[in-house]
Image 1 (cartoon, rainbow, N blue to C red):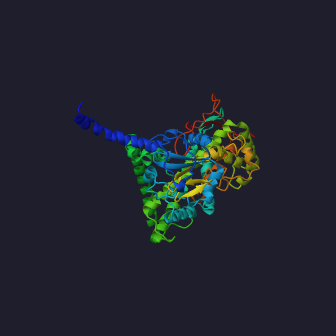
Image 2 (cartoon, one colour):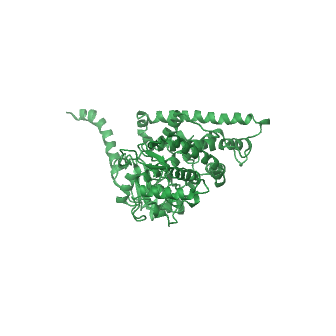
Image 3 (tube, rainbow, N blue to C red):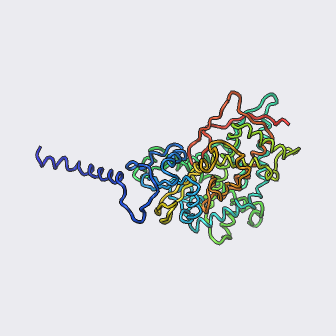
Length: 509
Protein backbone atom coordinates (compact mmCIF):
# COMPACT_ATOMS: atom_id res chain seq x y z
CA UNK A 1 0.00 0.00 0.00
CA UNK A 2 1.39 3.41 -0.97
CA UNK A 3 2.22 6.07 1.57
CA UNK A 4 -0.55 8.21 0.06
CA UNK A 5 -3.14 5.50 0.76
CA UNK A 6 -1.83 5.08 4.30
CA UNK A 7 -2.29 8.78 4.93
CA UNK A 8 -5.77 8.71 3.35
CA UNK A 9 -7.20 5.81 5.38
CA UNK A 10 -5.16 5.46 8.54
CA UNK A 11 -4.55 9.08 9.54
CA UNK A 12 -8.26 9.89 10.15
CA UNK A 13 -8.55 6.78 12.33
CA UNK A 14 -5.52 7.81 14.37
CA UNK A 15 -7.20 11.00 15.64
CA UNK A 16 -9.94 9.36 17.78
CA UNK A 17 -7.52 6.60 18.79
CA UNK A 18 -4.99 9.15 20.02
CA UNK A 19 -7.74 11.02 21.86
CA UNK A 20 -8.82 7.78 23.53
CA UNK A 21 -5.23 7.00 24.64
CA UNK A 22 -4.81 10.49 26.08
CA UNK A 23 -8.11 10.18 27.93
CA UNK A 24 -7.08 6.79 29.29
CA UNK A 25 -3.78 8.17 30.56
CA UNK A 26 -5.59 11.11 32.13
CA UNK A 27 -7.63 8.74 34.28
CA UNK A 28 -4.98 6.12 34.99
CA UNK A 29 -2.03 8.34 35.84
CA UNK A 30 -1.99 10.13 39.20
CA UNK A 31 -2.81 13.82 39.03
CA UNK A 32 0.11 16.25 39.07
CA UNK A 33 1.22 17.25 42.52
CA UNK A 34 -0.48 20.36 43.76
CA UNK A 35 1.37 21.94 46.62
CA UNK A 36 -1.89 23.32 47.93
CA UNK A 37 -3.48 19.85 48.09
CA UNK A 38 -0.49 17.59 48.46
CA UNK A 39 -2.02 15.40 51.16
CA UNK A 40 -5.51 14.25 50.08
CA UNK A 41 -7.41 11.53 51.95
CA UNK A 42 -6.75 7.93 50.84
CA UNK A 43 -8.63 6.69 47.79
CA UNK A 44 -9.49 3.24 46.43
CA UNK A 45 -8.45 2.44 42.84
CA UNK A 46 -10.72 3.94 40.19
CA UNK A 47 -11.66 3.19 36.61
CA UNK A 48 -11.45 5.58 33.66
CA UNK A 49 -14.60 7.66 33.19
CA UNK A 50 -16.53 5.89 35.98
CA UNK A 51 -14.07 6.56 38.76
CA UNK A 52 -15.37 4.67 41.82
CA UNK A 53 -19.00 4.51 40.68
CA UNK A 54 -18.61 0.80 39.95
CA UNK A 55 -17.96 0.17 43.66
CA UNK A 56 -21.26 1.68 44.82
CA UNK A 57 -23.80 -1.10 45.22
CA UNK A 58 -27.59 -1.06 45.57
CA UNK A 59 -27.16 -0.28 49.29
CA UNK A 60 -24.50 2.46 49.25
CA UNK A 61 -24.30 2.84 53.04
CA UNK A 62 -23.17 -0.78 53.28
CA UNK A 63 -20.79 -0.77 50.31
CA UNK A 64 -19.20 2.51 51.43
CA UNK A 65 -18.78 1.12 54.95
CA UNK A 66 -16.95 -1.88 53.50
CA UNK A 67 -14.70 0.39 51.45
CA UNK A 68 -13.91 2.53 54.48
CA UNK A 69 -12.75 -0.54 56.40
CA UNK A 70 -10.04 -0.96 53.77
CA UNK A 71 -9.16 2.67 53.07
CA UNK A 72 -9.95 4.49 56.29
CA UNK A 73 -12.78 6.46 57.93
CA UNK A 74 -11.99 9.49 55.75
CA UNK A 75 -11.92 8.41 52.12
CA UNK A 76 -11.86 10.37 48.87
CA UNK A 77 -13.78 8.85 45.97
CA UNK A 78 -14.16 10.00 42.41
CA UNK A 79 -17.74 9.42 41.25
CA UNK A 80 -17.49 10.17 37.56
CA UNK A 81 -15.99 13.67 37.52
CA UNK A 82 -17.13 14.53 41.09
CA UNK A 83 -14.76 14.33 44.09
CA UNK A 84 -16.65 12.86 47.06
CA UNK A 85 -15.36 12.72 50.63
CA UNK A 86 -16.90 9.80 52.57
CA UNK A 87 -16.93 10.21 56.35
CA UNK A 88 -17.28 7.04 58.46
CA UNK A 89 -16.03 7.96 61.93
CA UNK A 90 -17.44 10.07 64.75
CA UNK A 91 -14.26 12.16 65.03
CA UNK A 92 -14.26 13.02 61.33
CA UNK A 93 -17.99 13.76 61.41
CA UNK A 94 -17.41 16.12 64.33
CA UNK A 95 -14.84 18.06 62.30
CA UNK A 96 -17.18 18.28 59.31
CA UNK A 97 -20.38 19.22 61.18
CA UNK A 98 -18.97 21.18 64.10
CA UNK A 99 -15.37 22.36 63.74
CA UNK A 100 -15.74 23.23 60.03
CA UNK A 101 -19.54 23.37 59.90
CA UNK A 102 -19.64 26.68 58.05
CA UNK A 103 -17.23 25.45 55.36
CA UNK A 104 -19.40 22.38 54.76
CA UNK A 105 -22.84 24.00 55.02
CA UNK A 106 -23.60 24.20 51.30
CA UNK A 107 -25.51 21.63 49.25
CA UNK A 108 -24.50 20.17 45.89
CA UNK A 109 -26.59 20.95 42.83
CA UNK A 110 -28.32 17.69 41.89
CA UNK A 111 -30.80 17.38 39.04
CA UNK A 112 -33.35 15.31 40.96
CA UNK A 113 -33.54 17.77 43.85
CA UNK A 114 -33.74 20.71 41.46
CA UNK A 115 -36.66 19.12 39.61
CA UNK A 116 -38.63 17.84 42.59
CA UNK A 117 -37.91 20.61 45.13
CA UNK A 118 -38.73 23.69 43.08
CA UNK A 119 -35.21 24.57 41.98
CA UNK A 120 -33.82 24.26 45.55
CA UNK A 121 -36.46 26.56 47.05
CA UNK A 122 -37.05 24.24 50.02
CA UNK A 123 -35.12 24.24 53.31
CA UNK A 124 -33.30 20.93 52.98
CA UNK A 125 -31.55 21.58 49.65
CA UNK A 126 -31.44 25.38 49.39
CA UNK A 127 -27.91 26.75 48.95
CA UNK A 128 -26.40 28.08 52.16
CA UNK A 129 -27.13 31.78 52.39
CA UNK A 130 -29.73 34.37 53.28
CA UNK A 131 -32.67 32.66 51.53
CA UNK A 132 -31.96 29.40 53.37
CA UNK A 133 -31.69 31.20 56.74
CA UNK A 134 -35.01 32.95 56.18
CA UNK A 135 -36.86 29.80 55.10
CA UNK A 136 -35.41 27.76 57.96
CA UNK A 137 -36.50 30.39 60.49
CA UNK A 138 -40.06 30.26 59.11
CA UNK A 139 -40.04 26.46 59.21
CA UNK A 140 -38.73 26.29 62.76
CA UNK A 141 -40.84 29.05 64.25
CA UNK A 142 -44.18 28.13 62.71
CA UNK A 143 -44.08 24.33 62.45
CA UNK A 144 -41.21 22.73 64.35
CA UNK A 145 -40.52 24.85 67.44
CA UNK A 146 -41.07 23.10 70.78
CA UNK A 147 -44.08 25.32 71.43
CA UNK A 148 -45.68 24.43 68.10
CA UNK A 149 -44.90 20.73 68.46
CA UNK A 150 -46.57 20.75 71.88
CA UNK A 151 -49.59 22.51 70.42
CA UNK A 152 -50.08 19.55 68.06
CA UNK A 153 -50.52 17.17 70.99
CA UNK A 154 -54.33 16.81 70.57
CA UNK A 155 -53.82 15.83 66.92
CA UNK A 156 -51.24 13.18 67.81
CA UNK A 157 -53.31 11.71 70.62
CA UNK A 158 -56.47 11.66 68.51
CA UNK A 159 -54.79 9.94 65.55
CA UNK A 160 -53.10 7.37 67.80
CA UNK A 161 -56.45 6.67 69.47
CA UNK A 162 -57.97 6.14 66.00
CA UNK A 163 -55.20 3.67 65.14
CA UNK A 164 -55.70 1.70 68.37
CA UNK A 165 -59.49 1.63 67.93
CA UNK A 166 -59.14 0.51 64.33
CA UNK A 167 -56.85 -2.40 65.23
CA UNK A 168 -59.02 -3.32 68.21
CA UNK A 169 -62.11 -3.32 66.04
CA UNK A 170 -60.52 -5.78 63.64
CA UNK A 171 -59.61 -8.30 66.33
CA UNK A 172 -61.41 -11.59 66.53
CA UNK A 173 -62.20 -12.99 69.96
CA UNK A 174 -61.31 -16.46 68.75
CA UNK A 175 -57.80 -15.76 67.46
CA UNK A 176 -55.27 -12.96 66.94
CA UNK A 177 -55.52 -10.78 63.84
CA UNK A 178 -52.68 -10.05 61.45
CA UNK A 179 -51.90 -6.35 60.95
CA UNK A 180 -49.87 -4.70 58.20
CA UNK A 181 -47.97 -2.38 60.52
CA UNK A 182 -45.99 -0.59 57.83
CA UNK A 183 -49.18 0.40 56.04
CA UNK A 184 -50.78 1.57 59.29
CA UNK A 185 -47.75 3.61 60.30
CA UNK A 186 -47.55 5.30 56.90
CA UNK A 187 -51.24 6.24 57.05
CA UNK A 188 -51.01 7.59 60.60
CA UNK A 189 -47.98 9.79 60.00
CA UNK A 190 -49.53 11.08 56.78
CA UNK A 191 -52.72 12.00 58.64
CA UNK A 192 -50.84 13.78 61.44
CA UNK A 193 -48.75 15.85 59.01
CA UNK A 194 -51.76 16.66 56.84
CA UNK A 195 -53.74 17.93 59.81
CA UNK A 196 -51.03 20.13 61.32
CA UNK A 197 -49.59 21.40 58.03
CA UNK A 198 -52.61 21.49 55.73
CA UNK A 199 -55.52 21.71 58.15
CA UNK A 200 -57.22 18.45 57.23
CA UNK A 201 -56.52 14.91 56.07
CA UNK A 202 -55.72 14.24 52.46
CA UNK A 203 -56.04 10.60 51.51
CA UNK A 204 -56.58 8.53 48.46
CA UNK A 205 -54.49 5.73 47.05
CA UNK A 206 -52.98 7.81 44.24
CA UNK A 207 -51.92 10.59 46.62
CA UNK A 208 -50.06 8.11 48.81
CA UNK A 209 -48.47 6.48 45.78
CA UNK A 210 -47.20 9.85 44.54
CA UNK A 211 -45.66 10.62 47.93
CA UNK A 212 -43.96 7.22 48.02
CA UNK A 213 -42.59 7.69 44.51
CA UNK A 214 -41.45 11.21 45.40
CA UNK A 215 -39.38 9.92 48.34
CA UNK A 216 -38.06 7.03 46.25
CA UNK A 217 -36.92 9.42 43.51
CA UNK A 218 -35.07 11.60 46.03
CA UNK A 219 -32.74 8.64 46.54
CA UNK A 220 -32.24 7.89 42.84
CA UNK A 221 -28.97 8.57 41.02
CA UNK A 222 -28.80 10.74 37.92
CA UNK A 223 -25.88 9.78 35.66
CA UNK A 224 -25.76 13.31 34.34
CA UNK A 225 -24.81 14.64 37.77
CA UNK A 226 -21.59 12.61 37.70
CA UNK A 227 -20.82 12.10 34.01
CA UNK A 228 -22.50 14.93 32.08
CA UNK A 229 -22.14 13.34 28.63
CA UNK A 230 -24.07 10.31 29.95
CA UNK A 231 -27.12 12.43 30.84
CA UNK A 232 -28.98 10.67 28.01
CA UNK A 233 -29.01 7.52 30.18
CA UNK A 234 -31.56 9.22 32.46
CA UNK A 235 -33.87 9.65 29.48
CA UNK A 236 -33.45 6.07 28.25
CA UNK A 237 -33.91 4.60 31.74
CA UNK A 238 -37.14 6.55 32.23
CA UNK A 239 -35.80 8.57 35.19
CA UNK A 240 -36.47 11.92 33.53
CA UNK A 241 -40.02 10.90 32.64
CA UNK A 242 -40.73 9.71 36.19
CA UNK A 243 -39.39 12.96 37.64
CA UNK A 244 -41.49 15.06 35.29
CA UNK A 245 -44.63 13.08 36.10
CA UNK A 246 -44.22 13.16 39.88
CA UNK A 247 -43.22 16.83 39.90
CA UNK A 248 -46.27 17.75 37.82
CA UNK A 249 -48.73 15.73 39.94
CA UNK A 250 -47.32 17.00 43.24
CA UNK A 251 -47.35 20.58 42.01
CA UNK A 252 -50.98 20.20 40.96
CA UNK A 253 -51.89 18.86 44.39
CA UNK A 254 -50.03 21.67 46.19
CA UNK A 255 -51.68 24.28 43.96
CA UNK A 256 -55.07 22.91 45.04
CA UNK A 257 -54.06 23.00 48.71
CA UNK A 258 -52.90 26.61 48.51
CA UNK A 259 -55.97 27.71 46.54
CA UNK A 260 -58.27 26.00 49.03
CA UNK A 261 -56.66 27.97 51.84
CA UNK A 262 -56.83 31.24 49.91
CA UNK A 263 -60.57 30.75 49.35
CA UNK A 264 -61.11 29.83 53.00
CA UNK A 265 -59.41 33.04 54.07
CA UNK A 266 -61.50 35.09 51.64
CA UNK A 267 -64.69 33.73 53.23
CA UNK A 268 -63.73 35.11 56.63
CA UNK A 269 -65.74 38.17 57.64
CA UNK A 270 -64.28 41.29 56.09
CA UNK A 271 -61.52 39.25 54.52
CA UNK A 272 -59.70 38.93 57.86
CA UNK A 273 -57.30 36.10 58.43
CA UNK A 274 -58.13 32.77 59.97
CA UNK A 275 -58.57 32.99 63.74
CA UNK A 276 -55.19 33.01 65.47
CA UNK A 277 -54.41 29.72 67.17
CA UNK A 278 -56.41 27.74 64.61
CA UNK A 279 -54.10 28.34 61.67
CA UNK A 280 -52.34 25.47 60.03
CA UNK A 281 -48.90 25.83 58.44
CA UNK A 282 -50.30 26.91 55.07
CA UNK A 283 -52.45 29.62 56.71
CA UNK A 284 -49.37 30.97 58.44
CA UNK A 285 -47.34 30.96 55.23
CA UNK A 286 -50.09 32.84 53.41
CA UNK A 287 -50.21 35.41 56.23
CA UNK A 288 -46.47 35.91 55.92
CA UNK A 289 -46.83 36.33 52.17
CA UNK A 290 -49.60 38.91 52.59
CA UNK A 291 -48.06 40.97 55.38
CA UNK A 292 -44.31 40.45 54.87
CA UNK A 293 -44.39 40.15 58.66
CA UNK A 294 -41.01 38.45 58.91
CA UNK A 295 -39.11 41.17 57.07
CA UNK A 296 -38.89 39.53 53.65
CA UNK A 297 -41.23 38.39 50.91
CA UNK A 298 -42.21 34.78 50.34
CA UNK A 299 -43.73 33.73 47.02
CA UNK A 300 -46.07 30.90 46.10
CA UNK A 301 -43.26 28.65 44.89
CA UNK A 302 -41.51 28.95 48.25
CA UNK A 303 -44.77 28.15 50.03
CA UNK A 304 -45.19 24.98 48.00
CA UNK A 305 -41.56 23.99 48.59
CA UNK A 306 -41.95 24.37 52.35
CA UNK A 307 -45.15 22.30 52.34
CA UNK A 308 -43.30 19.60 50.45
CA UNK A 309 -40.50 19.68 53.03
CA UNK A 310 -43.07 19.15 55.78
CA UNK A 311 -44.26 15.98 54.03
CA UNK A 312 -40.81 14.65 53.21
CA UNK A 313 -39.47 15.24 56.72
CA UNK A 314 -42.63 14.55 58.68
CA UNK A 315 -44.01 11.38 57.15
CA UNK A 316 -41.41 9.12 55.60
CA UNK A 317 -38.69 9.22 58.25
CA UNK A 318 -41.21 9.10 61.11
CA UNK A 319 -42.96 5.96 59.99
CA UNK A 320 -39.65 4.33 59.03
CA UNK A 321 -38.52 4.53 62.68
CA UNK A 322 -41.81 2.99 63.84
CA UNK A 323 -41.52 0.16 61.33
CA UNK A 324 -37.94 -0.75 62.28
CA UNK A 325 -38.64 -0.44 66.02
CA UNK A 326 -41.51 -2.94 65.83
CA UNK A 327 -39.39 -5.16 63.58
CA UNK A 328 -36.65 -5.36 66.21
CA UNK A 329 -39.11 -5.88 69.07
CA UNK A 330 -40.75 -8.75 67.21
CA UNK A 331 -37.31 -10.29 66.71
CA UNK A 332 -36.43 -9.80 70.40
CA UNK A 333 -39.38 -10.94 72.56
CA UNK A 334 -37.57 -10.18 75.83
CA UNK A 335 -37.20 -6.52 74.84
CA UNK A 336 -40.84 -6.50 73.73
CA UNK A 337 -41.99 -7.84 77.08
CA UNK A 338 -39.87 -5.36 78.99
CA UNK A 339 -41.27 -2.30 77.23
CA UNK A 340 -44.81 -3.70 77.48
CA UNK A 341 -44.41 -4.17 81.22
CA UNK A 342 -43.13 -0.60 81.53
CA UNK A 343 -46.07 0.81 79.57
CA UNK A 344 -48.67 -1.17 81.52
CA UNK A 345 -47.14 -0.32 84.88
CA UNK A 346 -47.08 3.40 84.12
CA UNK A 347 -50.59 3.44 82.64
CA UNK A 348 -52.09 1.62 85.61
CA UNK A 349 -55.86 1.59 85.26
CA UNK A 350 -55.90 4.12 82.44
CA UNK A 351 -57.07 3.00 79.01
CA UNK A 352 -54.17 4.60 77.16
CA UNK A 353 -50.77 6.20 77.46
CA UNK A 354 -50.75 9.98 77.24
CA UNK A 355 -47.84 12.27 76.48
CA UNK A 356 -47.62 13.09 80.19
CA UNK A 357 -46.60 9.46 80.79
CA UNK A 358 -43.83 9.31 78.22
CA UNK A 359 -41.21 11.00 80.39
CA UNK A 360 -41.25 7.98 82.72
CA UNK A 361 -40.78 5.42 79.95
CA UNK A 362 -37.00 5.09 80.03
CA UNK A 363 -36.86 1.70 78.35
CA UNK A 364 -39.14 2.84 75.50
CA UNK A 365 -36.82 5.78 74.87
CA UNK A 366 -33.86 3.38 74.88
CA UNK A 367 -35.66 1.20 72.30
CA UNK A 368 -36.08 4.21 70.01
CA UNK A 369 -32.44 5.23 70.41
CA UNK A 370 -31.27 1.71 69.63
CA UNK A 371 -33.56 1.59 66.60
CA UNK A 372 -32.10 4.88 65.34
CA UNK A 373 -28.60 3.49 65.89
CA UNK A 374 -29.17 0.30 63.90
CA UNK A 375 -31.60 1.73 61.36
CA UNK A 376 -31.08 5.47 60.79
CA UNK A 377 -33.85 6.57 58.39
CA UNK A 378 -31.35 8.30 56.07
CA UNK A 379 -28.15 6.28 56.56
CA UNK A 380 -26.13 8.50 54.22
CA UNK A 381 -26.98 11.97 55.45
CA UNK A 382 -28.03 14.47 52.80
CA UNK A 383 -24.77 15.46 51.06
CA UNK A 384 -22.91 18.66 51.79
CA UNK A 385 -20.36 20.52 49.71
CA UNK A 386 -17.24 22.41 50.77
CA UNK A 387 -17.10 26.09 49.92
CA UNK A 388 -13.35 26.56 50.43
CA UNK A 389 -10.12 24.63 50.82
CA UNK A 390 -9.68 23.22 54.31
CA UNK A 391 -8.12 20.41 56.31
CA UNK A 392 -9.99 17.51 57.94
CA UNK A 393 -8.12 15.09 60.20
CA UNK A 394 -4.86 16.39 58.70
CA UNK A 395 -5.93 15.76 55.09
CA UNK A 396 -6.38 18.46 52.46
CA UNK A 397 -9.95 18.83 51.18
CA UNK A 398 -10.46 21.09 48.17
CA UNK A 399 -13.31 23.53 47.67
CA UNK A 400 -16.18 21.98 45.71
CA UNK A 401 -15.74 18.54 47.25
CA UNK A 402 -18.99 16.72 47.93
CA UNK A 403 -19.26 15.24 51.43
CA UNK A 404 -21.24 12.15 52.43
CA UNK A 405 -21.48 11.29 56.13
CA UNK A 406 -22.23 7.60 56.65
CA UNK A 407 -24.21 7.74 59.89
CA UNK A 408 -25.05 4.04 59.49
CA UNK A 409 -21.36 3.06 59.54
CA UNK A 410 -20.59 5.35 62.50
CA UNK A 411 -23.43 3.85 64.54
CA UNK A 412 -22.02 0.35 63.95
CA UNK A 413 -18.38 1.22 64.61
CA UNK A 414 -16.93 -1.47 66.92
CA UNK A 415 -14.52 1.13 68.32
CA UNK A 416 -17.51 3.06 69.66
CA UNK A 417 -20.08 0.37 70.46
CA UNK A 418 -19.98 -3.01 72.17
CA UNK A 419 -21.55 -5.74 70.00
CA UNK A 420 -22.58 -3.09 67.45
CA UNK A 421 -24.63 -5.47 65.28
CA UNK A 422 -26.87 -6.56 68.16
CA UNK A 423 -30.14 -4.92 69.24
CA UNK A 424 -29.48 -3.95 72.87
CA UNK A 425 -31.69 -1.08 74.09
CA UNK A 426 -30.25 -1.40 77.59
CA UNK A 427 -26.99 0.14 76.37
CA UNK A 428 -28.75 3.52 76.54
CA UNK A 429 -30.30 3.21 80.01
CA UNK A 430 -27.24 4.61 81.77
CA UNK A 431 -25.84 6.56 78.84
CA UNK A 432 -26.02 10.28 78.15
CA UNK A 433 -25.65 9.73 74.39
CA UNK A 434 -28.56 11.22 72.47
CA UNK A 435 -29.54 11.64 68.82
CA UNK A 436 -30.02 15.42 68.77
CA UNK A 437 -26.73 16.25 67.07
CA UNK A 438 -24.41 16.77 70.04
CA UNK A 439 -23.05 13.22 70.26
CA UNK A 440 -21.39 12.28 66.99
CA UNK A 441 -21.49 8.57 67.75
CA UNK A 442 -25.23 8.77 67.02
CA UNK A 443 -26.29 11.25 64.32
CA UNK A 444 -29.32 9.80 62.50
CA UNK A 445 -30.66 13.35 62.04
CA UNK A 446 -27.33 14.98 61.24
CA UNK A 447 -25.85 17.88 63.19
CA UNK A 448 -24.82 21.50 62.89
CA UNK A 449 -26.48 24.10 60.71
CA UNK A 450 -27.79 21.48 58.31
CA UNK A 451 -29.09 19.08 60.95
CA UNK A 452 -32.72 18.02 60.64
CA UNK A 453 -34.96 20.58 62.37
CA UNK A 454 -37.86 18.12 62.78
CA UNK A 455 -36.46 15.83 65.50
CA UNK A 456 -38.96 16.85 68.20
CA UNK A 457 -41.90 16.51 65.78
CA UNK A 458 -40.89 13.03 64.66
CA UNK A 459 -39.97 11.59 68.05
CA UNK A 460 -43.19 12.88 69.66
CA UNK A 461 -45.18 10.76 67.20
CA UNK A 462 -42.91 7.70 67.44
CA UNK A 463 -42.98 7.55 71.24
CA UNK A 464 -46.75 7.93 71.54
CA UNK A 465 -47.54 5.35 68.86
CA UNK A 466 -45.17 2.69 70.21
CA UNK A 467 -46.21 3.22 73.82
CA UNK A 468 -49.90 2.73 73.03
CA UNK A 469 -49.43 -0.20 70.65
CA UNK A 470 -47.40 -2.04 73.28
CA UNK A 471 -49.72 -1.07 76.12
CA UNK A 472 -52.88 -2.23 74.38
CA UNK A 473 -51.85 -5.34 72.45
CA UNK A 474 -49.67 -8.41 72.65
CA UNK A 475 -47.64 -8.82 69.46
CA UNK A 476 -45.92 -11.76 67.83
CA UNK A 477 -44.96 -13.06 64.40
CA UNK A 478 -47.83 -14.51 62.35
CA UNK A 479 -48.36 -18.27 62.42
CA UNK A 480 -45.89 -20.06 60.21
CA UNK A 481 -43.35 -17.21 60.22
CA UNK A 482 -40.25 -18.08 62.19
CA UNK A 483 -38.00 -15.21 61.21
CA UNK A 484 -38.47 -11.78 59.67
CA UNK A 485 -36.79 -10.95 56.39
CA UNK A 486 -34.56 -7.95 57.17
CA UNK A 487 -33.86 -6.96 53.55
CA UNK A 488 -33.72 -3.19 53.12
CA UNK A 489 -35.26 -1.11 50.38
CA UNK A 490 -33.16 1.21 48.24
CA UNK A 491 -33.38 4.99 48.15
CA UNK A 492 -32.67 8.03 50.29
CA UNK A 493 -34.77 6.69 53.17
CA UNK A 494 -34.25 3.02 54.02
CA UNK A 495 -37.42 1.08 54.73
CA UNK A 496 -38.05 -2.61 55.00
CA UNK A 497 -38.22 -4.10 51.52
CA UNK A 498 -41.11 -6.36 52.50
CA UNK A 499 -44.23 -5.36 54.48
CA UNK A 500 -44.12 -5.77 58.24
CA UNK A 501 -46.98 -8.12 59.12
CA UNK A 502 -47.57 -8.95 62.79
CA UNK A 503 -50.17 -10.79 64.81
CA UNK A 504 -52.05 -8.74 67.44
CA UNK A 505 -54.19 -9.78 70.38
CA UNK A 506 -55.66 -7.72 73.21
CA UNK A 507 -53.22 -7.53 76.09
CA UNK A 508 -53.82 -9.98 78.94
CA UNK A 509 -53.52 -8.51 82.42
